[in-house]
Amino acid sequence: MPRHEFYDDDGTTEKEQCPRCGDAFLADHGDRLHCGRCSYTEWK
Image (cartoon, rainbow, N blue to C red; front, top):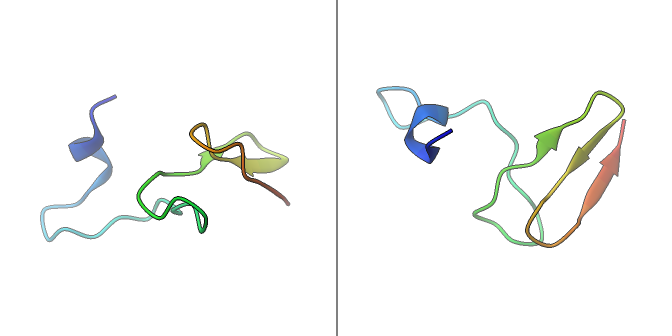
C-alpha cells in the first residue's frame, strides 16, 4: 500500500509512528504493534 494512502486530505493520520525510527508506521498485529524497519515492538 502506498504511503500516501495512510494520510487524510489535510495531512493527518491515525496510524502510530515508531518512536525509534520516527518516520515508519507501526503495523497492528492484534496483540502487538511492530515496526518492520527496526523491529521495535509494543505489546498491547
